[in-house]
Length: 539
Image (cartoon, rainbow, N blue to C red; front, top):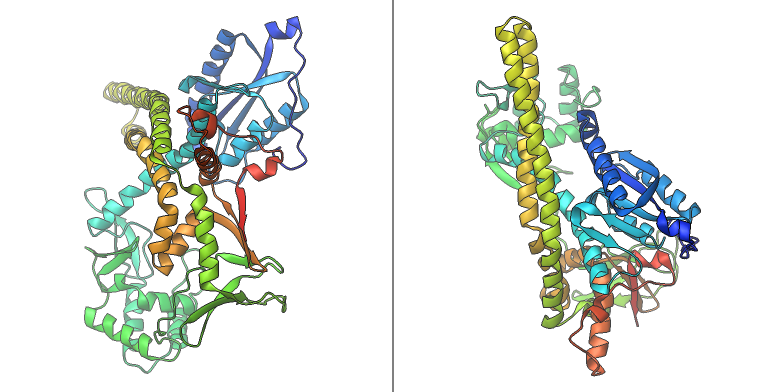
């Protein structure tokens, strides 16, 4: 594995026999149980990889398959493959269909890169070896990072339908207490008042608006009416009652993803009653709105190096901002630090990402070249989806003929017809997502470069809230101790910081040439653990 105790494998001795039959392993993966049940993705991958290995004269010694969701923490057979490669020095290559099949994140890339083996990605026409050119390695690293975003974008597309329903005024999720989900005539899932629970919700709003009842009283009323939590089935708690009374959905509108929409559902209470309830919640003890507090730029970002507690902000003399250890583990002796001193060190750290226009153009051109391979990969996936769609269409046509001939009954036809049409709709959504994600590939890479290039300038001019969001995006593991800041760049910014720093040094020394690949190539660190995120510190 890629831990600190992992030894990099040396190049195995090559005999004449071994040169004729180089050994390799295959790795195939699908990202959901549903894909595995369809029964075509894994077999198709393995057939393709076996054919490629045979064409390249590679002998397959093991095949590893993972059928897991991307959200699950870890892939069992990926780990077994890494262990096998660590122990089997004669195996020199891993073959996977494409980048996002092999790597799920940058950590996976580091793990395999530390083994010093060949990586074959035939669908992207890419082979990366320890002896590969520097530009190939840089592009491969960027593709690993962008592959993660590519998959996230596909996942995001599946949520767009819910946002589209919200824009139509349709509540896109499970019905809240007092409502129930139902299907409209056009097949859309909407909410309507639940005859069993809606009257109790109405009584709660009307009672609380009088000012004679507390949240505790409302919880008791809900329990008497039999209102329960949808997940646990237990009586709803006071906190849930408070959220219900704050929820505008009962007055005809709702909030989704930070946006307020006018709903088409039937409101349970009038707008006047709902607003009266809001005033009561605002005015009562425990329900008052707090005065807006000062916005500390670095709250929640920095930990004390001595004891590991968080640094918190404090205003002195009404205008000076200081940060100090929260002291949750006792007084550690770390002195107070001025916000200006911390900000100055953050500015210096972000300055490592600066690079000139010549470097930016070189990396953009490399991304454009890699996009051709990525688009080919996306086109192949779309072709597979279209073949699956056509196969289902033929099934439906044959089944319809069987129904006309009396070989199957109507209920079976309707059930399978609905099942296959639903699958076809999912396929169309995935095709659309693939097309849109492919179009944004280069654009996303350019945005990453622009953010890195301008990070220091942006940080100097932003509001405290924007500064905190920028630092959360770029840095991790920020620690302060004895007037000294240390932090780690997140990927891909860690990789860019290394190249940008070397670029500036050579340019200052007057030794910069037009061959930027000699500067922007990935460098191997002596400690593999430190390659995941590049630690930086300033005094």
